[in-house]
View 1 (tube, rainbow, N blue to C red):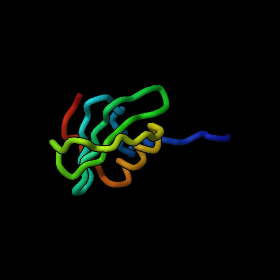
View 2 (view 1 turned 135 degrees about the vertical axis):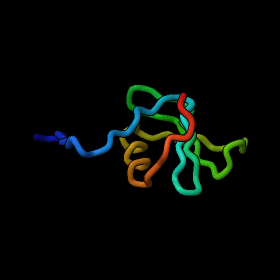
View 3 (view 1 turned 45 degrees about the vertical axis):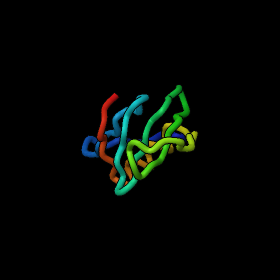
Amino acid sequence: RFGATRVSANSPQITPLVKGQVWKTGETYVLITDTGKLLVHYKLTKKLLQRGLRKHLASIQTVQAFLKSNGAELMVKA
């Protein structure tokens, strides 16, 4: 089956990405600024209240894979 993925009962599920969430990965924070059907806008920062940050655009699956591989913790729920 092309594109089929299996999810075991023991694998942790990533929380769906929602506007306003703040994820912590090591020393870096990932701020979710906007989400759509397939893409998400986010900002990367080392300080939470830093201004003038560049927005990044990636697919939701890519961002979730990044968060999962770096052991991200959800700091602020939207």
